[in-house]
Length: 176
Image (tube, rainbow, N blue to C red; front, side):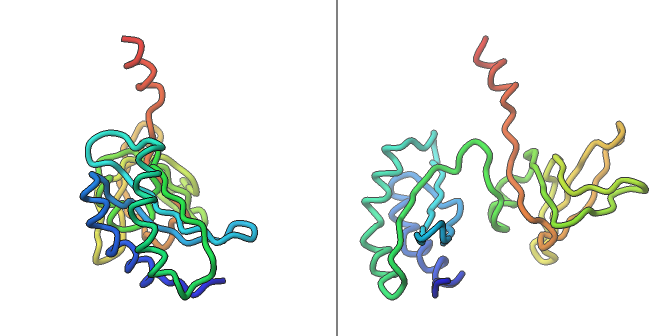
């Protein structure tokens, strides 16, 4: 596919971190993916105070593109894509699991996991309670049959996870 590695992604994050901080942003995560015939370097950001808009993404892109071009000069041609983390935040690193402790999350496991007797789950919502960085595990709490059940999951068993945005609450708040 490409010769960019996690080390390369970390180098990019370190190289642009101060520029983003100066503009009032932080990096949520960086991905390098192939979509159809294009390689895309996706930089997903969050604003320290407020919401990220399209103009913010354009300003960030202009500010960091030269540094990234220098770092990517030995790689294949790529497209730089800067975007907002959005309403539901992807949990793609330990840093993000830690940041969103206390939030409701949606978890999709690679395979069904036995949580309680006769309760096997593959996809579910739960509250993220804790992160054990040494063991690479998260602790979540889920209500199952009117019982709050707390259990641990190995991060390696998680296919994907993201925060859950409460759209109902947003619409109720906007009607007030």
